[in-house]
Amino acid sequence: MSDEQARQVYEQAGFGESLTLGTRPAVLVVDFSCGFTDPTSTLGSDLTNEVRATRRLLDAARGKGLSIVYTTIGFDPSLKDGALWLEKVPALGDLQIGGQWVAIDPRLDPRPSEPVVVKKGASAFFGTNLASILIAQGVDCVILCGATTSGCIRATAVDLMQYGLPTIVPRECVGDRAQAPHEANLFDIHAKYADVVGLEQALEFVNSVPTQ
Image (tube, rainbow, N blue to C red; front, side, top):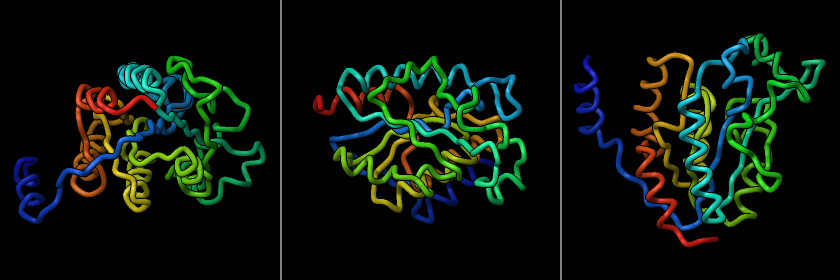
């Protein structure tokens, strides 16, 4: 089945309608840590373009006073908190708390006022206090960026839908280590869980909301 045929099948089944966004968005940057954005890391790939696009979005969000939250994957040096994920993907053991690969990519210029949530699963919500952070800041919709599209971005998009937070995913601000899973998961995220949009559309949305 071609991509166009797949789109037609999904449209006929009623997938892919647009979500109604709120007026108090947060930018959620999932796992743009050095372990994923530095190609010298076992888990990493060259996500330079995606990091630069996300930096543009973050700078616009900062100008509006919007909430910004990062996540990073980090395990205790014993790795006993890794559970089955480390059995499936042993390279995740490189992501040890306090190590270089857990740090947020400095090209994003993370600020002290922008919290970093440490997670041990795919979804940014699983076993973390992310929901409490967003609720406390009055967030009513999310702009989702980060890596990887086929893993933690998809898992987080599913949970954002289930938490009732309308979400947009700027295509240029998410990345993966291979193009095929990246494109397939963007297609499915847009069909079922969030609105996949261009970076310029996301920037227009940020510029349209009231300064917080």
